[in-house]
Image (tube, rainbow, N blue to C red; front, side, top):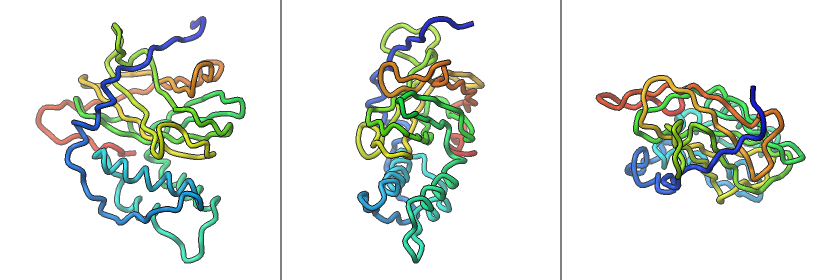
Length: 231
């Protein structure tokens, strides 16, 4: 039985330098040419192109087939609705978390279909889908009782950070995607509760901004890391 309001401390700032090691080794080259998107014409297309490039740069690329379909343009210009539906269909299997922000700026979060598989000691990146009815332009943050913090936290075993794509915060568009980077030194099966917010007081009532996730963590010694986005 839970009482009172959950108060989680922010995660350690070590993740600000995550790009200096781990899955961010020498940049790879996206096998499929990604066409530049005119952001003013379709902000979602610009967001998706940035997502493709960010995941590739982080060493966690989407499959070439998915990139090809996301990047392809029909002979007749697609409507924004058609493009959004295509993006949601193609990216759904790779989303670990789906975040919803209602018109009152309350945040809810739910588990997506992607498998929560990690490699011990190696940063792993997942996709987070954001449905933003309020047009919020604050940063999406992740906290939780199992995340390591700058202070003492006996339960902390996981580092996690949200990476926005076109700026350091949400764009305010109704649908956009961000990246969740996580890392742990543990192995085996471990559960962590992730909590999402866009500022103080934005978590939905009934703790619906909290998502418990059972991670399967592949041991580091001898062997290749598990695929980052396997559904």
